[in-house]
Image: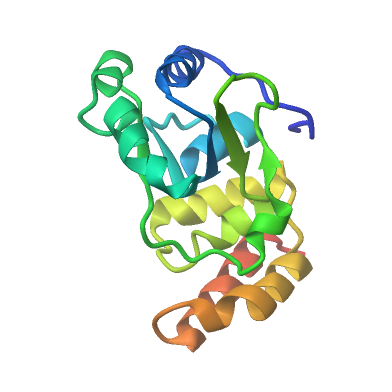
Length: 183
C-alpha cells in the first residue's frame, strides 16, 4: 500500500525531472494526473512515457516547459519521456483544495502536485476507455477509494461540469462502483 509520504522517484523519471528542473528559468508548479501519478504514487506497474498536467503556474511558463520537455524537445528524445498539457479534463470543481505535492523540496524550481485519488479516478470518467476502467479498478484497491466519496464528489463537484448526457456519466460511475466494490 502506498504511503502518504513522498513517493520514490525512480529512473528514468528521476533523471528526466532533474534535467527539467535544471533547465527551467524560474519556479513552475504543475497539477498532475494520469498514468504518471498512478505509477509514482500508487505504484501502478504499467509504464507511462508522459507526465500529464492540467494546470501550470505561472500560466505563461507553459511554452517554456513544452520547449524544454514537450513532445519534440531534446529532453523528450533523450529520455523518451515528456510533459503533456491536457487541455480538456473533467475534474471535480474543488480539486485544487485537495492537491498534495509529490516530491516536496526535491527540486529547486519544479513543483509537482497530484490529484487526490478520488479526483484522479473521476478525471477518467468522461473518457471511460478500457485503460481508464483498469486504472480505476487498480486505484480502488491501491488508494483505496471509497464508493461513497466517489458518488458524493461526482454529484457535488463534477456532474454539472461534464459535457454530454449526464445520465450516461451516472451509469458509468455506477458501473465502475459495482465492478470495483463488489460486496
